[in-house]
Length: 358
Image (cartoon, rainbow, N blue to C red; front, side, top):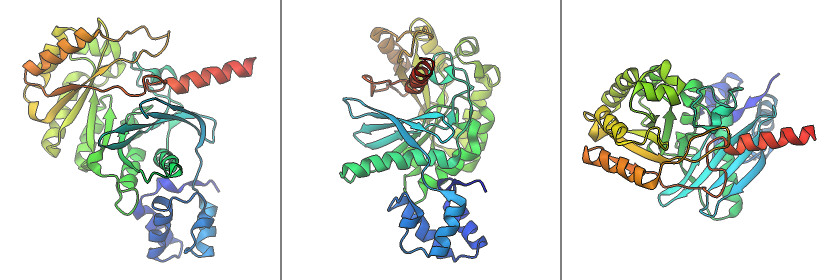
């Protein structure tokens, strides 16, 4: 029998599973409380659950599977965790401190096939999707770290912006969101959760139809097809026209603001011309679109992009503002550690490979 992570089950799925195995409905409530409120790491620690149910759970599920490989702490309080999966793969999770609370950035895939030319995550192709349980456990492990500090802090916000394309792992993503939103458990508010996509138009429609009240961010990074295809090969399958149709559907269906992520690359997409084209794309959606301008984090010697000059960033920002586009420049965190997404993972994998050779 192959065991799976119990964190991959929503409350409703766990309840149905226990009922199907001859247990009362209240058992699901007890188990859920031990998992997400008391946050035990062994089934045997669930003191008010009978031995028969404990044995059943141990036979079919595991609680912990991620182990800490490496932890980097920044002077600004950002912590990057590198976790080992049982199959030997590595994933990254990041804890960030903000004035509004503690935010965790989770990974959804081992590697990434989207192939954005500026991104460290795409250096290593996707090996597999993470299960819903593996995504949830990233939050749990970070919360364990906070619990051990004894400061009564909790994860209050989640961004699904780590390694991988979340909408390419759609079903597991949705299970993850349902688990962490559940008010009987981690109770992370839907409006405190943001999912980022590189632009899988078909999934934007599906996401809108689910009406989860979760925030959506679109990694656009270029305002025209020629430039976007040059830096993001996903644009060949989902060009800007298709993306804008999907965005319109999402805005009409949910009446929720969408965030447009735009990494500024020196001499590539940071000119006034691109700023004007970007403003044009969203001129009829001003009240429901927010453009997040992101200073680029150089990744390594294999990726030859540079950070835009501060003058260029400010000029781009001013152009958007003058066109009535709501926008801001992202405050950087973790700049004294491996800040770019996927950077720590690729560096550690390279180091382990070199050690094995030596």
